[in-house]
Length: 68
Image (cartoon, rainbow, N blue to C red; front, top):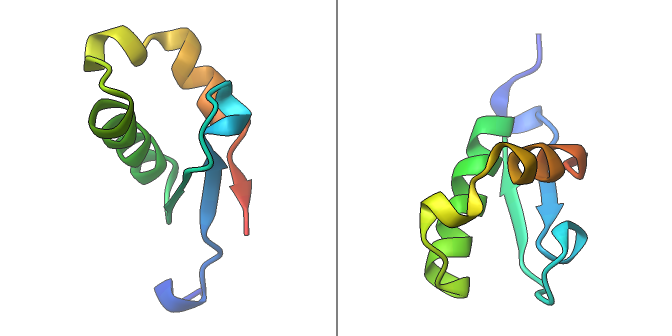
């Protein structure tokens, strides 16, 4: 059994998803990554949630998630 403190962190960079931005989303789960990506896009890129979280973009983000 892996304890939470021993889990690998998941990451995805904004740049990898097509933005000119060095932000890296981090989380312990894919759901946490998606939540953090949504928050970043709305707060820092001034997108509306419905503009950015299309099924296509969600899949693109998920395809770039890495374990660190």
